[in-house]
Image (tube, rainbow, N blue to C red; front, side, top):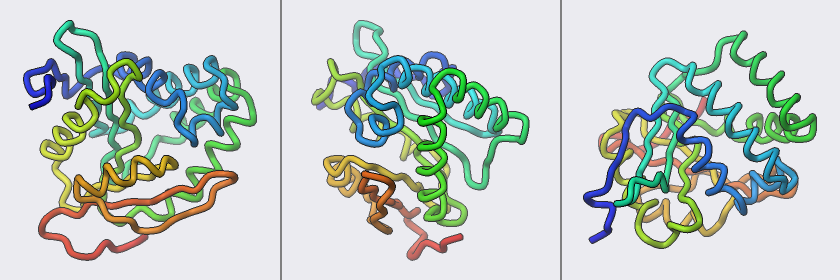
Length: 206
């Protein structure tokens, strides 16, 4: 049994609490390394800006898990079906990303989104991010949090995600995700995955 079975979880944390956890969790993640150029400063600014914009979406969900000492160790962020930032929120994200992260990070983010959003099945939630701080890796936090969010997210259209880390594909398969397609985005090999609702059989693409 994981120590997180009785851990402190928050199903509605502010984005500002999730951003530092994901900044640390994605330090070696291939897509984030490509977008940020390996810069800690850029990665921190990118998550702060992106989660701030994501929080403007009606119905957006965030989950945070703390260890028995109360330290936040894992976070997840989900987008509801058919949700998109308003024009003003998107413009603000572009301006903040350009200012805080630079044009390379902005253009690479847009390139990644353009390639992956086309794979999103109609009516599906999107698991944008899930990550565990390196110090807590291998202790069950990620699996506990993933199981929690899948159990508590109403998703008749299923849950969609993409990953550029091949090691994550095996984990997601264990949680019922199937591979929809493998994409090449710049130097990245990205896997688009979908977990159907039990009543669903085949995803319908957009």
